[in-house]
Length: 328
Ligand code: NDP
Image 1 (cartoon, rainbow, N blue to C red):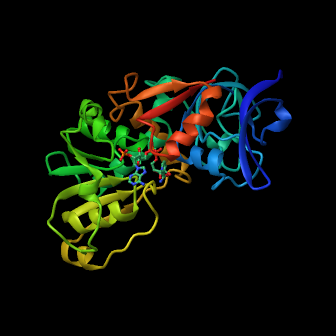
Image 2: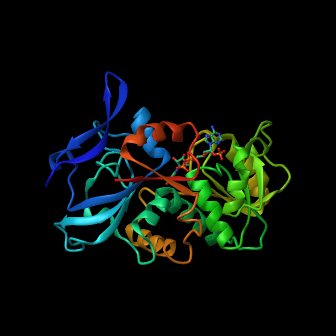
């Protein structure tokens, strides 16, 4: 195997650094499937690994929790040379060398065959952010949400999870309200399918009320913190919120009141350890009835390995719009 390029994040004297390096197979984590990576993508977690090192479990590490590519070789019967595959989540890019590399070596148990109906590029435009949006919608629907029920709030709307969630919900006929700190992105959010765009201050708790005017049938929340506090206090009777992120904070103060007086559902979403059998079903849906209509448009843009360190800093600063894919 020839040498290949990868972005390596390392911690030296408590300081993080990111460098593009030429590596060999000996630099990759162990696994049965060797993949020529075509595309990776940028998620908030990649920013945390590369820029602050916060959730990296080992150093040095190749970040990149998502990748799509073609199998070069496999020691596992489930995969063979030439197969097109996706690998996302588990410990990829946090403990196990990840997708910001021309070559990856991944345990076969974490590898998903690319479903028919998706290209490798489209799979990365979706990536973990889109997979998480899909899980959130599934959970809301499993808890009774149907199109025509009322307004569905998506906060952190201009980000990766938010943008894909808006596009998928609108595609299913939901009435989507997008909340953003970047109202200059209103036209972008409407083009994805939001009927209405509001400022995030409108859905941020400032007075600590446990209940207030019933407003939302459901919500997808990648922000957490005071935004989630507001949502819990303003869900309609029997409404649900899918909690999937922490971009705005991890601490949430609430009381039992909205639960026992309005029967609301607080649903937790985890894409990392989501079981493989169900994961395959979600990817099939992402290639089929849940495929976001905006793939291939302005919902995503492409960067190179060299441009990645700046993009990783931007995502932590809330400056990235939609999805970013990395061409390897
Ligand atoms: P992005 O950075 O693309 O999106 C986050 C968005 O949140 C920003 O674009 C911004 O939207 C908003 N935001 C950022 N900072 C703040 C703040 N301080 N207060 C309020 N809003 C803020 O990240 P991703 O979409 O990739 O991920 C979003 C979150 O979801 C992250 O916390 C991530 O860790 C989590 N996540 C969880 C997964 C799981 O399995 N549960 C899987 C994938 C992601 P705007 O400017 O429009 O307001």
